[in-house]
Amino acid sequence: MSEHEPSVRRLCIAVAPGAPGLLTWIQRSEGLYRLYLMSNPAEGVEFACAAPGIDEMFLVTDLITAMCRQAISVAGLRRPILAGFHVGFTKVVGDGLGGSGADRTLALVRDPAVKAATERDGTPALLAVAITTGLFEELRGEGLPSHGWQAVSTADAWLRLFDSAPAERLPP
Image (cartoon, rainbow, N blue to C red; front, top):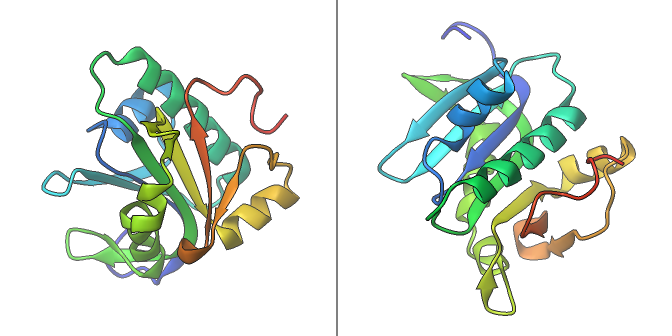
């Protein structure tokens, strides 16, 4: 992406504290080189957006599966890992990425209601995945199973907690 490109609707991914470098590791180990990666070490947030033309359904499900595998394999991992997904306008801003898509994705992993929902019975999940409602509905139309997802209405998102790698391939 160059600074002169217009805003483009892209899949945006944010991963909040818990696993610094997680998206970088997944990109290298899983061969997902069509992700543009950024990180903000001060906030402990890693951000990526997908290149145009990527099959969003499979990218989202592949990333969730890879995040679970990595979270399980890392000893001493701060928990939970909180990942957010949204599709929105993204553009180059200074030396990073910005726009409403990036802003909404980052806001999702910082949302107090989403953070509060990452615990089940007082125990944090290994991985909590939040998807904005609009993207969730589109993914459901493409075959994403709704089992295990809960609405977080104040965040206008859907959340699923993972304590282990998904038993089924997402989508089934």
